[in-house]
Every structure is written in structure tokens, then in C-alpha cells.
Length: 106
Image (cartoon, rainbow, N blue to C red):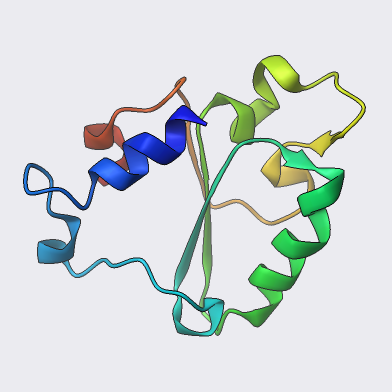
């Protein structure tokens, strides 16, 4: 998914998101924010819920990209449960296909 590439670009020297105090962590138990890309599929629904439940409070959910915000082009597929807001309480929606790294930073 193209949103993943744009998210990964945040770690390169051009954007260097770590200088702003953000970092990607291996465990949701160490996360304040979960940034979800793509529509929620049947295979991922339980994992998305468990990830959110494992996060400490306060926690923020960001839906990143058209598929996460409104199911995008894959929305009518059998495997798609819905957009992220159908599953989790989304605080921020970042539209775009994909959103630019500059937009994610803001």
C-alpha cells in the first residue's frame, strides 16, 4: 500500500520524524499513537482491535489515506470490513491516495 511507503519516508533524513520525538515501536504497549493505513479487512480486524486494546491511555488513532478514511477503491470487496472509524475511535483522518509525508507530519 502506497501509504506505507510514505510513512516509511518519514524516517529518512529529509523528514527525520525522530527529531520531533516520534518513533515507530515494535509493541503497542509502548505506543501513544496508532497510525492505520488501508481499509480494515476481515483478516486484520481482530489484530487491529487487539493492537488498540494493548495501548496505554491516552491513545490516539490516525486513519492514514483514502482506504483507511473511507475504504477507498477496495471498499466494496468481500474481505473489507470497513474504514478504520468503523472499528476504532479515530481522532484524525489524513485523506489522500497516498497522503504526502508533509501532510502526515502536520
